[in-house]
Each structure stands twice: as C-alpha cells, then as structure tokens.
Length: 337
Ligand code: MRU
Image (tube, rainbow, N blue to C red; front, side, top):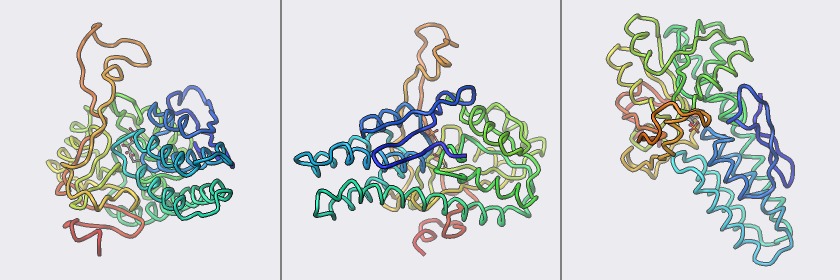
C-alpha cells in the first residue's frame, strides 16, 4: 500500500483525513499546497511528511523554472514547508538535505531535476530503511511473545511504504511470530482505529481495536507481551516524542514489567536535541478534541487542550529499533557508536 505518488512537477496524496471510508487522491503542484496538506494532516506520520515536503519543494522548483531569483524563492518555500508541523524532525531533516542540494547546483536550469532526483532518493531510502527495521525488530521480538499493543499509525500510510513499528508487526506476521495486535484507537484523530485497522485488515493481520483507556486493563490481565510504537523525534538521551498517549503506555508497561519498544529510522534521531525538554510539542486546535468531523461531542463552547504529542523518557524505553541496529540504554552513547 502506498499513500504518496509522484512525478516530475507533482505529488499525489491519499487524503488520510477521509480514510477509511473514502479513498480520495489529491494532486499538488506547489510547495504552499503541500505545506497546507501537511498541516491539515492529509499526509501524516514523521517519515511520510519528510518525503512529501521533499517532493513539494521539487514541484515548486518545476513550477518556478526559468523565473528570476529561483534559489531565493525556493529557500523561502522550504522555510514555509518546515513550519507545517513542528514536532516530527524528519520534515526538517529532509528539507535540510534538499536545501543543501539546492545550494550545490550552479546551473539554475538543472535545479528542478536535481531536487526531484534527491526527493526520489529520500523516498527510496525510506522504503529500504523500513524493511530493515522490520527485519531487525521481528528478530528482537520473536521470543518476547506475539501479543503486541501499538499506538497511532506507523505503517505504509505514515511512511513511503511498509512502516516502522507497524513494519515490525508486518515482519512478525510474515515470520509467524505474531499472534494478535491490540490497536489503540488514538484519540482524538483516531489514527489507530481508522488507519492502522485499515492497513491490518488489508493484510489479513489479526487485531482488536481498543480505546486508549483500555491499555492498563489489558496489561493487568496479562494480555500484552510487548508494546511497540513509532517516533516523531528522538533526543540524544533517548527521550522520544510520539503521538499523545505514548507516555501513558510506557508508564503502564513499566509498572506491568512489559517491554516497551520504539521503532524509528535514524532520520528521526535528532542528535542536536539533548533531551525531551527541548522538543517542540505541536498544539493543535481544541476543536479536534471537542468535535469529531464537525460533529460536537462536548457542550458548545467547552474548553479543551490538544497537545498532539508527548515525550516518553528514555529510561522507560527497553530498546530503540533503527535500521542501523538495536540501541539500548544508555542512549546518550548508543546513537553515536
Ligand atoms: O500526528 P501524526 O499522525 O502525524 O503522528 C504520527 C505519529 O505519532 C507516529 O507514531 C510517528 O510519526 C511515527 S510514523 C512511522
């Protein structure tokens, strides 16, 4: 399954705000349109927004080809894309790379082609990386037990293809070590109930959706062998920002003696950020909490909070599965070795 497609001068996205009931593809030909699609979460998931932004910048270069001040205009577009969502570092990482390519091209007539070529490279690498994470993770988890709880959506829809935490689950299923997946619904955007369930059904992987508040009950009943989640930004000390609700799961897992794994590409590891305190947490609109798809579920005018991510301290994480290998505490030295 793929939710991002591309061609020179354009990028098409499967609108994730409409899944699972409607399959609507939209095509974008400017950086501003792609930035809006990222902010509106038509495309979401840390690696997917990095790749989408790269193709968005390449499309912008195609659109502006031959115009004066091309490089300056593209740097501005890159800055606009960067602001689309603040927590997932993959967005900034991908655009850092694209900016470097842009600065390195002397012949302006070649900029669009070179940017598109690099966006392709980011997308291809993401697919390879996820496969490797899946294999390493399945190997690590094969003796832990096959009943896995996961949060949010970390699959093909959140990456270019295959997925990170959901990639590990896919690989476990392929290897025969997976028994069942418990899918947190993931309030308020319901990435679990809508998107992870959609992907698992598509692959015939057995699962149950549970509300976020059921995790403690399941763990207390001895129904969960391991928790595995993705990440939006991992600080140098292993503190990990991921979808709101991840921290609560890690605390519950610790209490119940259940291993808690994070699966993420190295592009999600931000060695410039010392600890979780320095990770910017996106605050989204309260209406996404008080309403569901424009239907109010709270009294009119009710106040609500909406931090979209939380930070799980590295000490609660059993191991971080990257394409380079399994990193265990202490993370401060683990990522650089
Ligand atoms: O707000 P979202 O849906 O973009 O949040 C996504 C997550 O938190 C994922 O767990 C994370 O990006 C990893 S996706 C491979």
